Figure 1 (cartoon, rainbow, N blue to C red):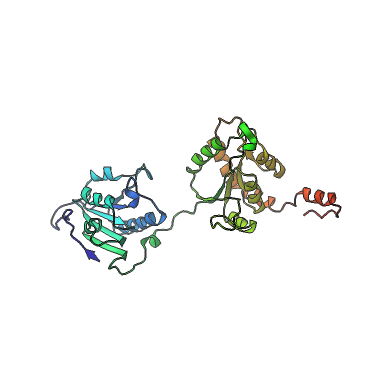
Figure 2 (tube, helix red, strand yellow):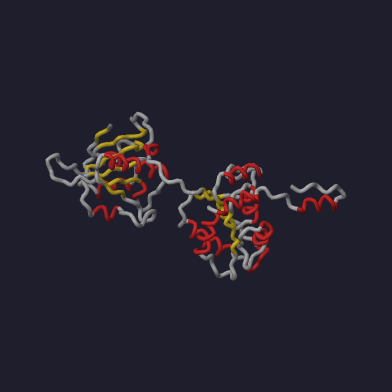
Length: 319
């Protein structure tokens, strides 16, 4: 433990009658800060400990990340006896400003990285309980102790690129804009899926088997690509499929071939109907799971047999 006195404001004296309420902050509290799963998980660990010991507390959130929460401006007008800064490096002007804003509070940093012990961002804390860094003995990160939460569905999102061959009928931009705006309202773990293979770029799969492995780990695939639909069904995963071409084109045709629902729009100016998306989302995560599992057992396309016949070979058995 490091105790510092950076001249940023003295903590309340033991005899003072100050309400014991704590403000929990982190990089997720700053307007232009960054909210990460680790930082927020570390804050949840701290909040759980405060609840368990009966300490009232609030969390300050960036209004960009959680506009419904208390931001630092609103928190500054409330009566806190202590401020806790959780996770991340103790460096930068945003932290120095935090000390100035809450000079009346006892300020404690926990689970943080000490970058420069001479930085006022560090010296402004009355107590620093470091995770690592200069002069610190390495400690386990706090995110490990976050209380277990719900288990939302894992949703793969496979978007088609712009397809100029469809000319003015292509509604890709409008479809993807409305689809993206709707997706962020759903409680799910979103995972980008790109069917493009690349053996030199780690961000892409190198062969179809790798892509299949990703798809099988999802509960649902949301897609505007033909192969997003087909490869989801191949792996027994329901697909919420949208054709990005007005009145439907190859994605809608695949839906008919597989007897699988595909949403379409009637004009390029029209976005997707959120109520319809919600309805098919619910279906995919319930009855759609059984239907997708059945589609995975369907026989190979008869086009294979027809090709073999054209080439003069025996007709393979379907199935």
